[in-house]
Length: 181
Image 1 (cartoon, rainbow, N blue to C red):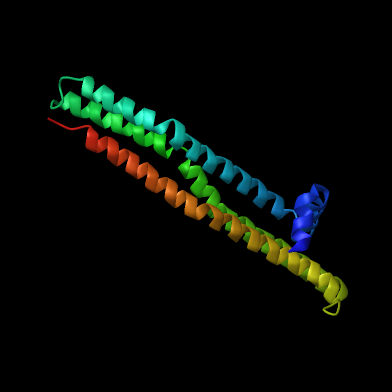
Image 2 (spheres, rainbow, N blue to C red):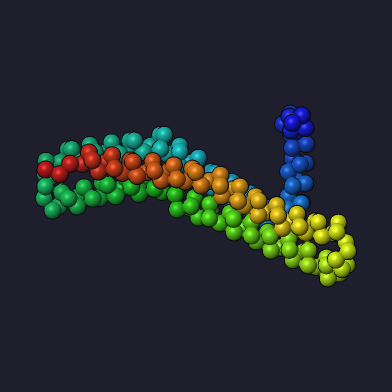
C-alpha cells in the first residue's frame, strides 16, 4: 500500500511502472489502452450530453408539438414520429461505438494471448523447454493483455447499460408528452 502512495506522489515512478507493465504485456496493451481511452472519452461525452443538452432537446420537441394545433391527422402523426426520432437519435448517438469498444477490448486481449503464446513457442523451439525464464516473458505477454482486455470491457459494460437505460427513459418521456388527440 505504501508503494502505491509513493507512486501517486511521484509521477515519474507511476510512468515508470506503466512503461514496465506495457513491456511485460507487449504491444497489444497499447491498442487496449487506446481503445479504453476512446471508450471512456465517449462515455464521458454521453454523460455530459445528458447533463447539459438532452433535456433541452426533449423540451424543444415537446414545445414544438404543443405549438401545433393539429394533433390527430396523418401528417401530425408523422411529425410526432419525426420529433420522437430526433430525440432518440440525439440520446443514442455514440452508444454503438461504446458497445463496439466494449466488445472489442476482450478480443484485443485474445490477440495478446496469441502473440504471447507464439513467443513462448518460439522460445521453446530455440532453447527447448528448459529455459523457464524466457518462457515466463511470453506467458506474461499472453496473460496481461487478456486481463487488461477483460478489465477494460467490464469497466464499460456497466456504463453502457446505464446510458442505454437513460436514453430509453428520455425517449419514453417524450413519447408520453407528445399526446395524440
